[in-house]
Structure formats: C-alpha cells, structure tokens
Image (cartoon, rainbow, N blue to C red; front, side):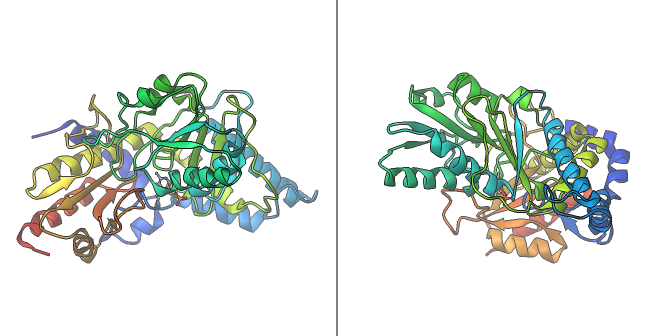
Length: 403
Ligand SMILES: Cc1ncc(COP(=O)(O)O)c(C=O)c1O
C-alpha cells in the first residue's frame, strides 16, 4: 500500500540524487549506509571547501590584529554570527549569538553564565529528566552549586506522555507556579524522534518565563524559526548540521532578563568551525530546508511503518504510523527500536556486518539504565529509501535469531 511518504520520496528523488552526490564520504563508500546522523552528520564538499579556502587564504586570529588577514577573519566571524541569526528566522532587535563548542557546552553556559544569577531562594525551574543528559546535568549541577550558597532551588521534571514520548502538556500546568523562573526543553527528541511541540510549553507557562531550547536535533534538519517558537535560548551543535565538530552556538533573545554573555576569558574561538557552520547554513538553504525536513521525515516514516509490520519489534515513543503529514505528531529524522528476540547490541553488530552504521546503546538519555539499550537509525539528506529497506531486510531476518 502506498503512503504519503512514498509520494514525498518519489517527488524529491531527482533533487535528492543531486544533493547526495555532494557528500564525498558517501560517494566514496557506495556499499555503506551511514545511518547515525543524530550522533554526527557527514559534510558536503561545499563545507569542506569553505574550510580549506579559509585556512589557505586568510587564516588569522579573530578580534586581534589590524592586518588584512586578521580583519578579514574578524569580518567572517561577524558575518557567521549574522548567518546564524538569519538561519533561525530572527528579525528581533537585541538578540545575540555566542559561539560555543557545541550543545553540551552551550546549555552549560546558559546555566552557569545566565541562569545562576537569576535564581533566588525558593525559586523553581522545570527541566526534562528523560531527554539528553546534556539538557539535564547543567540544571542539576547548578542546583547543587546554589545550595552551597544557601539558595535552594526546586528542579521539577517536565511531565512526559509515556505513550508518545512527547511532553505531557495536560500535566504541565499543575507544575507552573508564581515561582517558576525557567524552563528547559528539547525541540526534537534524540531517542523518540518526535517534535516535542514546544510552542505548547510557551502557551502553558505564559509570556514571562524564559525557555531554553535544545535544538541539537532540529537546527540544520528542518526550518527552525525563533519567531514561531518564542523561546529565549536556542542551543545547537555544528557537527549535527553538516558543519565541523567542536563548534556550536547559543542564540539568545535577551528580552526576558539580562543579556546573555559568557563569563570570563573566552580565548580564541574555533574559527574554522565557525566558517564551516556559516557554509553549512548556506548549503542547507540552497538545498532547501523544507525539502530536507520532508525527505528525512518520509524516510523515518518508511522505517516506522516497515518496523510496525515486523513481529517482535517495538519502536520507542509513539507507536502510530507517523507519515510525513501526520496531524498527530511529526516524527523527524530518527527512529529507535528494540527487537524482542535479539539484543540491541547484537543487532547493531549484525547491521554493521552489512555495512549499515547505526547506533545501538543507551543514547546518553537521562534516567536510562546503563544496560537499557536500543537501536537508533537516524538519517539526513544523503540517505536513501533503499538504505531504509536494507535495515528492514536485516531486522526481518533476525526473526530466526535468538540472543
Ligand atoms: C538532543 C541532544 N542534545 C544535546 C546533545 C549533545 O550534543 P553535543 O555532543 O554536540 O554537545 C545531543 C547529542 O547527541 C542531542 O542529541
């Protein structure tokens, strides 16, 4: 039976072929299927070329020196800051962009360099206890640090709807009080793959509470607009959006509270990484982020639907068939599952034997038991429907296996 996702894949096939050809590591390995993009993405030639061009023409330090290479580098970094702003659909005044090492570093900077000064004794914050560790540790550590100074802050767990993996927006209102000072959320869950509907969080917490968004799995995967989301911080990693590792950004609205400014001596930033991030945004824009979102959503719907037909397989999070135009909830570019007959680690090895690279472990999910493993298949623009079908074929064969 044909689905909406088949139509999307057919419509975008030629577009996709042109883009896939631009990833050197993909074209150099035709038999391999890289399906671990939620961990890190592959890079198009345009991004690699931009880095080479920078390092072989005007490489210098930023904000230091008045000779041409130095001023050129400073101008590039300033332009990259603007590039992040436009990429996030930011048309506000007063916002800022700080470059960081990645999402983990950025969330910690929001906690240490901004939130730490906003909280007083008896305040409450609401944060996700079942998302990525990177979006829980900084808030818990901050609570401990403040407690040492006699400031007691309650850290409340964002309620979750176990059947879908989405936040439970019906239970959230009972947590919001006059002492709620801050909320941390995730845009797209790195295990369940679902869009966490964070616009509803703003509706519940009201207009004054700052919201910090972990956008590691959404920026560079689909359009993300700070105008639509009305959040105060957007934090993401370059390496998950086709740029180099070791760089990321914190976008801050700077409206609900003082301006976000990293504390202390920052030192030399990752200039080559920042250049790569600007180039990646250019590439993503030219490719079409809406089409990339449609393509990756269609691939993950194909996988979800295919897995649902296999006995012994359980997809984590929402069980419904999340086709590209699902009115229920969008599944984005990743699907995580378990097989009742085969251990996830074994399944990961079986897939690797077939040249299929997926992640099979606990996925750095907060609150998960250390041996509670599952297989995650995550895609980006270079992946194909054929690669999804290869995964399904291997999982189907596992029926006869026992761990
Ligand atoms: C949702 C989410 N948040 C945060 C992170 C941490 O990102 P990084 O390792 O780039 O700091 C990840 C990484 O997988 C993630 O998926």
